[in-house]
Amino acid sequence: MRRSSCWLDWWMGFRRNIFVETYIRAGGTPDSARSYVSYLRRADALVGDIDKVWRKDGRDALVGHLERLPAGAFGSERNRRDSLSAIRRYVALLGVFQSPDKASEDMHQIVVAEPILASVDVGATDPEQIGLLLKEAQNLAARYYAVTGKPLGMTGEIAELAAAETLGLELAPPRTAGYDALYRDDGVVRRVQIKGRAVDPADPYRGRCPSIKCGDLFDDVLLVLLDRSNMQLLEIWRSDEPRTAERLAFPGSKSRNERSSMGISQFKSIAIRIWDKATGPLQDAWITPIPPTRLGRPRP
Image (cartoon, rainbow, N blue to C red):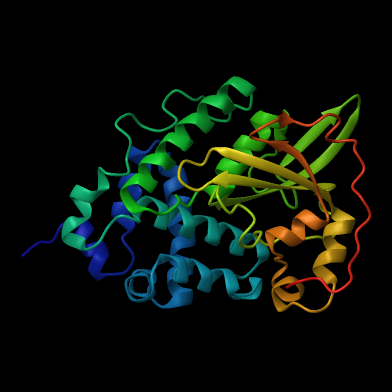
């Protein structure tokens, strides 16, 4: 008895063909899909079976397990970053699947009627195209949250688009080390790393920032807070590389010192708010000095 390719995916490892079909129907290119699959194979080998871990412990535990692995396990920091990006995209696109026999019917719950990015020029970076892309991604995120009750695993990508459109940033080429965008003004160029977190608007400062890698790779770091139900922009906070590195190195927290991650409230203590939903942009957001940081007895 012959099985479909989707069934073969289920029994022979992660659901490669389902992922590729869903990704392409959602507007991705075959070349990008093949690249994602290569990194998914790496992740699958590291955890034993990504679908088995997913079914047993949940998708958040799967992603968390891979996030805690050192770069050496992936072969390099770049491989680690790309593998994590692939696994987040995988669980985002396939997150509503409950069993292999429901895969085909459930696929339609998260794929938009018209392909995502269908009206966006590949490689475009002008504000109009970025705004269109952001709107489509947010619409998909809202539908995904309505179906699953969970944020879509595209927080980082949507945060970059939202920051670029709102602050007039120039997005960096893919896989640029250390920063995600450039800020240009009167000949001044600043490298900007962008971190996004989907939060509850009623309690936006609960939780942790994504990992921040320092080492003279960026000038400013932005924390972009998004409404987890629809990925709409709530607030943007800015800090710089020296203050961020100092806070992460301050002793007392394993998460800070070893995983380069701090609480949102901790990031706020070394940052200034440069945009919020209620007031919009703040005057002179990029040149306003960040107040001195007091590092006494920080919370973990």
